[in-house]
Length: 254
Image (cartoon, rainbow, N blue to C red; front, top):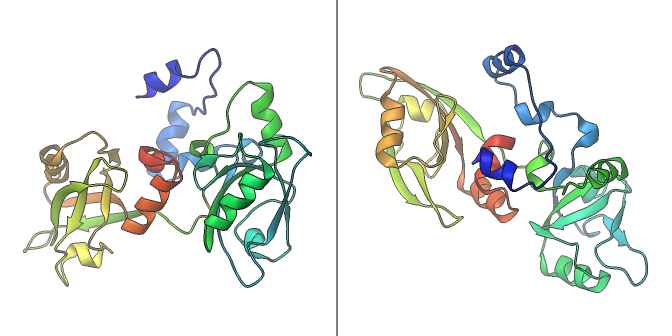
């Protein structure tokens, strides 16, 4: 998959790299590798909930143009609290590029969003960084630290009655297939670790299970006799990240 993404990048590609020692140190400390990218070259993904004053931002664009939208942010309003930088440029709305939108079309899309909206935005410096290199700014590169949905790491130590959960294969909100956690027994290790019914498993013992079937995932879980570490996301978070175009990238960038 990595090779395919590089090949699909054309003549230019932007890579974030660490030397081997730094990678191992960051991994052992549980550091979020994506958040180690310099802030000044990262767009930002912001989830805004409307209040009685609205979303707390206004949009301006040059007359007669499409896809060029700059945001003015109301201080202490919903957009400001969600982390939208004043003067930033709007790139995506609810996972869709705004490149082909007129101001009227964008206004209509915002009204259709109801009480919540997710924006991919970039400062002028970030926009210029990617534009000069002929690169497209995408949600997969974004700073997601201000989003309300987080993955969770659960460390389970097996008890006399086992871990206390059942793994089931089922359909994902994205249309694919995933491994989900059900029948979480009260008082057993899974519940004590914070497992919730309906959580989807993203990784086992630090390794992604993307592409694995049910039996392969079970073998990963059983690979260590008496303990396992699971990276999971709840249904609301899972649906949210797919809706804004993260899909399988959620594990890499959270």
